[in-house]
Image (tube, rainbow, N blue to C red; front, side, top):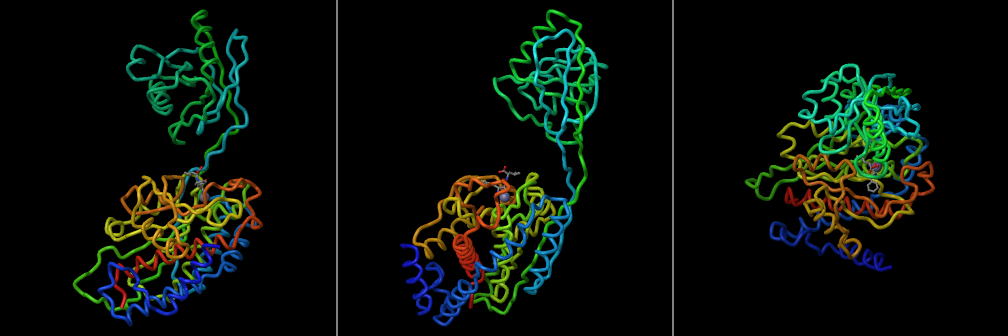
Length: 452
Ligand code: BES
Ligand code: ZN
């Protein structure tokens, strides 16, 4: 209620053309300039079409879009075609990644050991069958292994102090053919070997209680053999893609003050287009991809001396891989020219909470400031900011680019579930977020270039 009254007043003020775009810069504008700029803001708001976003989400969420699959390729082709239909030049940036499949069979048998064990695989454990004498090797630190010969043996290692990966490399260097890890605190954890390539011997993970029992057993019977069997795990090289549409500077706006040449003249609007397996990802994240398309459509004919890059990333769900690849391939000059990254992820669920902005360090930055100014103008209150590092804004933050994630909080119960379908999407939420982002973007563009 509050929101809609506020909107009516805002639009009425816009129509009268009496509001200076931003108080601090008001002195740079003549009244005609202000009017033009306000009219453009109005045009942007009027052009946003939640039906267009809804229809694109509907198309994209017909099936899951797991990175590296044909369904991702279809989504990439669809996004590219749409960008091009608005008149943009596009680039499809391919990158490789390793796709790991967890094992279906994990067995550990130990001579004369009667207690039952429930060995777990670690992420990136390789398949294989090994057997040998078990040797307790402490935490697996180099100095502990100095006088041990592990050739052909299975190392029993406690969790702690150094990574599973380092422990494994250390015992492999001493000749170990397999590893049994055990936890150093009660409870079950999902251990990871960190990377695919370094996991060179079969390994299992036990609980702290199981580990303690095994150590006792070995102390009583110093020569104990074990055998480890892991089947079904595999690593595959795969290819995913980012889709990049660039709005080149229109340069038909004259700067008021030529000497005030700006050095930050690129803004990135982004969203990932991939989903997890088994989830059609209407909200996560066909919603963000469709909003990126919509913002590009809306901005198409808006004059801007700032270059705007509209990007959908692949393989976010495998660890922010598309955005990491994109940022890693920017030149130093490009990094220094990007003033902001607006990242849209899960922006349209009926069943999620209110919009929030998340930054990697939890602090305000240019993106959150512009978004708060826009949301205050549009809805009467600033969108809250908190810390969050679960999406593609993070690689931008890591190289010092002001970035923020736009997301509804708390997340809907269908997050990463088969129910994340088009029937869960709210056009009102899409409209609200798109308005906030577009006004924040427009304010940044006209500050950068002192729109005439
Ligand atoms: N859209 C989610 C991120 C998210 C979900 C943020 C709910 C806040 C609340 C994203 O696609 C995702 O699932 N990210 C992964 C992490 C990523 C590094 C693989 C996650 O959060 O598990
Ligand atoms: Zn997501």
